[in-house]
Amino acid sequence: AKQEGRNTYRLYRAEMHVRDHHHLALETALRNTAETGEGLDVHYQPLIDRDTGEVRGAEALLRWHSAEFGVVSPGDFIPLAERSGLILPIGRRLMHLVAGQLRAWRLAGLTPPRVAINLSARQFWQGDLIAEVCQLYADYDLPPGQLGFELTESTLLDQHQQAAATLKALRELGCDIAIDDFGTGYSSLSYLQELPVTTLKIDRSFVRGLGQSRGSGAILAAVTGLARELGLRVVAEGVETPEQLEALRAYHVTLIQGFLTGRPAGAEAFEERYLREPQT
Ligand code: C2E
Ligand code: CA
Ligand code: CA
Ligand code: CA
Image (cartoon, rainbow, N blue to C red; front, side, top):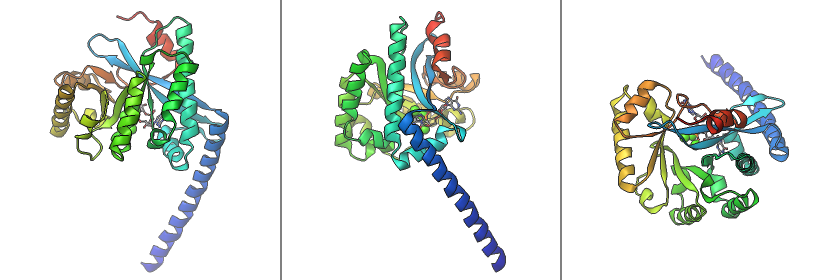
């Protein structure tokens, strides 16, 4: 058994080695991408009003096609970017890609909806976020309501006062502020009273549980009740089936984001589907 243990350990070490090596190579590739912007792209996923079918917003989702590794999922490269600090230059690139696209759409006479950008803690807490966002509005000639930001609870909980000041500045620029993956943090809810947020995005784990586990329904009822009291918008994430969509009706959730109502799509496809089609 001892021998076996040692072999397992060796194997483990070997795997670690391969994995570390892979991580290093991936990080090097990501560093290149951060510098050149090559292979970075943005997909847009619509937020749909369930009752009218209207597009009420979109979320910008980063895509990375590495020359070396092919398509790498955000679930893999975002954490790496956060750990290495590369999220700062990459996030900056994303903002410019989004703002440039919005400007192009507007110049083409189209009316793009508000686009929400995900912010990692590091991006939120860097000193010059507000200056950067200001500059973005100016450089790309965007109207106040054009951008939104999504943050997780854990990002905001660290330092309330400072978070509140930054969020207030973003609100003054006309930005929507959403709490992402709402309900998955361990936090108390009192911070919602103190921070000028506008939207709660209910994590898809609760949507998935609808009709399967009682708990999900209870949490949905609690969150939507709370949102109503506080005057916040609610978005249900990860809606995949007509049954889930129907079940959400009971909780009066009308804003839907999920594969059922629209998958993330490249700018061109998004434009075709949501900005040029006559809305019914
Ligand atoms: P998120 O912010 O919660 O984004 C929603 C994720 O859910 C996206 O995954 C989207 O493709 C996926 N999704 C949407 N509808 C459905 C559905 O009906 N079913 C299922 N199963 N999934 C659905 P994606 O694009 O792989 O992004 C994963 C995460 O990576 C995001 O989670 C976000 O935390 C992060 N991320 C993506 N882009 C950025 C970015 O530009 N900056 C930062 N900081 N993080 C980003
Ligand atoms: Ca998000
Ligand atoms: Ca989310
Ligand atoms: Ca997430």
